[in-house]
Length: 513
Image (tube, rainbow, N blue to C red; front, side, top):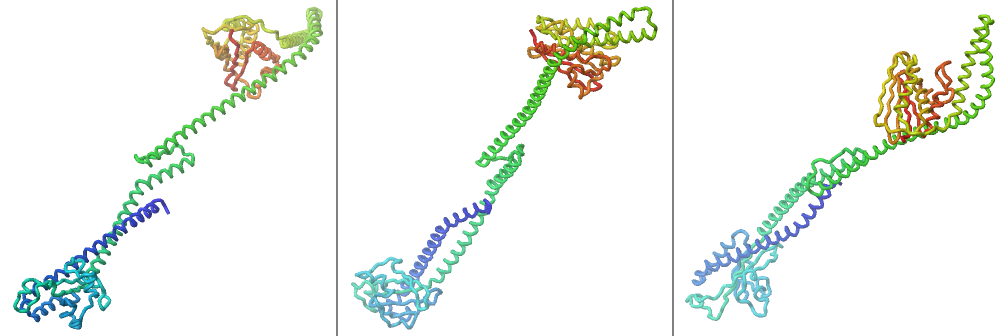
């Protein structure tokens, strides 16, 4: 059973319970009113008979009096009319069987006046009325009216009554109460019909009112809660009233809005957390790779130093002796070419050994305040005349307010030379090398980028490893390793990003002075 049905039944029951006593009292009042009207009507009939027969009684014309009583008794609703002497004898009755009989003073027609210790000579109309069952078991109303001994009665020549006699007799009129009962039943039926109609109308009105003011807003609230339960936090309740349900709807809207904001904040925190986790993961991976590279370089440097020293002495002898033999004029052409090959390869080996020694002997930097922009300019002046830079445009974007760096200018120059040379060698023909400097969070950032061939993803994580090179027969693979060690010794960092066939960028960070 829904809410509307429950409320309608409850309210209708309350109305019915409150209207039942009202209806009962109303029916009772109508019944009393009709009874009083019947008593008044019967009393008026008795009064009319007494007054209209007064002259005939003075003339002692009993036949005429009885005839008039018969005519009055023939009226509808009158059961019978009888005249009773003060001694209780029925001297006339429209019911002939009663004539001549004597009534007991305790009879229903006499007990109104004779129930007291002393008979009443004067009684009100209601006290002179009675309700009883007739011989057929029907309810009837009887009213008695005393015939008083007036002056005209005890002075009339026709028949003489003593002057001290107050009551000559009683006129007893009995009328049917069927019409009273019919009207009471009719009024009761009409009242029941009106009550039920009123209950129906009130119930229908209450149902419509509850549906409009309660049920429909509650259904909106239920629909809203279902949408919120399905995580649709954009749901809002429209057309909220100014009553308590409207206030509840506005509270629901406020709650949903706050939940929506909280969810957005949680999602934003989730995205931020994911990005921070990714960033921290990359940093940890970078730190791990740097640690591994540093450990690898440290252990490799010790090995390389020993190997370089062992190779350097015999290599020097080979190079010296082969150079002397090359200068001899007695060598034939084919032998001279062989000696030249030995000298050339020995020089190449010497260069490799020198690179190994440089790699193993990265000394502690001699720190001093220096201008990074000036060091880069010195580097470009030193290598700018090489042939690989003839078709390359170098774009410089220096920060004029760049702070000084606490660094070893010679070692930084060596780093810039290695990176700029690699960028020039990565460009095949015409190209652009961009150099940018700026201050970032207490550090100096130097970015060197080119639009060369780029570095493949599989090689990108190895370019700082010793002896790794993508230049066949053109490099030792130690330049970037030495540069990495120099920047690390300066307390900085060096990162690389590259896209194949688009170019490469080196980002170098050095602490400001």
